[in-house]
Image (cartoon, helix red, strand yellow):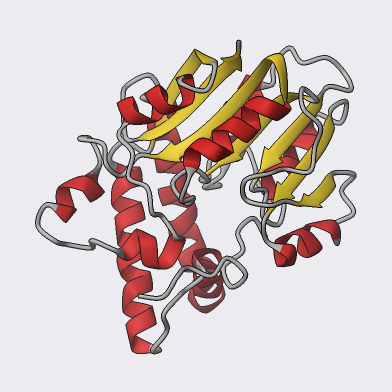
Length: 273
């Protein structure tokens, strides 16, 4: 299997939304909650912003904040800048962001730590650019957790490398490992919530197996999951979109109702000591 190419699979093209039918809804709700109480002109950074869907929506909802996005993909940054959304986007190196130390009030990351060879270096950079007392929100799918359906399937060698092949996931944290790692860099836990307990996990697994089938049929090594489902939307028409919206709404409701009950999908808010 070749190395995952992040210039071929850029995430964040669409619009994040609080609507129940949006797959971004719960993550957006949790990150906005983490920003509660920040004063006007507070500086907020999304690390790994891709094409900017989350930080763009946060700026729309909280126009009083100074919002920044950075990513290692030049393609993603170029695309994000085309939106003219009053967010500052910057190209970043994987282990060094182009910002001064102690300069941000909050840092947000969605689906990043499971992708990087050295997650500690990313957390160290977040710690560096945050002010003392600054907030760090991260969403991480912990595929090595005992509650993960992926962890269960891999015991039987089912779908072993699908998330690596089609999403670039190389780290399989447990919830305990994730919290211990982040706290080791000078952070104190503030709040932890969970999402996609049962239905959400089943939907995720079905999605990756669908992409695998599509890739084999078309002799592809890599498939952009956002583009894959966008194309399905166009082919499936209104009936497909209705079914998709209903399923996504049920996943969001599941996450809201059971947010305090542990699952492998972790939304963690910590504070820099």
